[in-house]
Image 1 (cartoon, rainbow, N blue to C red):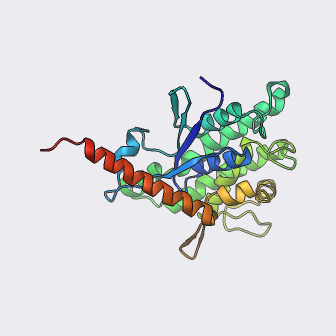
Image 2: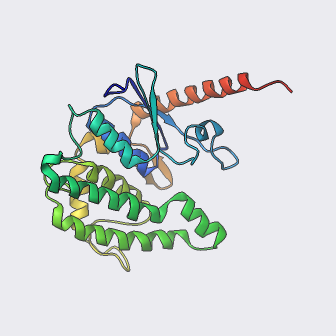
Image 3: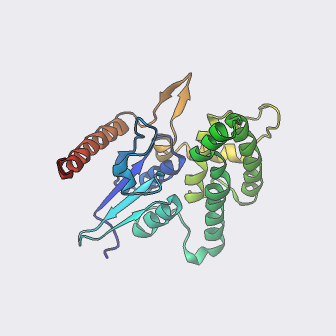
Length: 265
């Protein structure tokens, strides 16, 4: 199998923090992606065409195709980040080399902390269970979980951060951190040095890193969009609108192909 794929297709959702990680990383490394927006059915379920690619129905999914006809499908964002970094070593490295084992382990540890400990507290599936099955208040749950997780993350970053999460070079730790914070804004979390409500601590290190990252175009254009008075303000502007249009045309074509294969009754 060739080192670099001939085509990369990312199946994602605009507000998915895990999807944003891959968009940001690809932009930082100048890797071309074909982006396909995954839409839920009117029934609330997943598109059966998408389920054929990822039976779990989660996003993102990354499909890499090679000139020799082989392909690989990845469904976990941390694996995708490592795949992109190893497949394109000639561009900006987001994971430190083995020769810098201390920083390499710090970057991977922080990324895993965010992806596996912090993020799971506010997944759509969990929130639906809390609201529909248990009759709970999802906003209160997310705020409480985020407060605890972000306070712990602040303490960890105090030991490793300089300009970015680990030292002075951007890494997958930053790629995981920024979408998390961008999404947390929507649940009432702020990073200012002013009071933020009962239970909130100031998060100066997290805030400083995020502001530094957002100076880079990759984070500004490919992160999680903002809400303003209930209106979605995409950061992707013309480029992302064009990608959405391409994904819609592709989805319609796939549906036509599936219908063509269905036997007549």
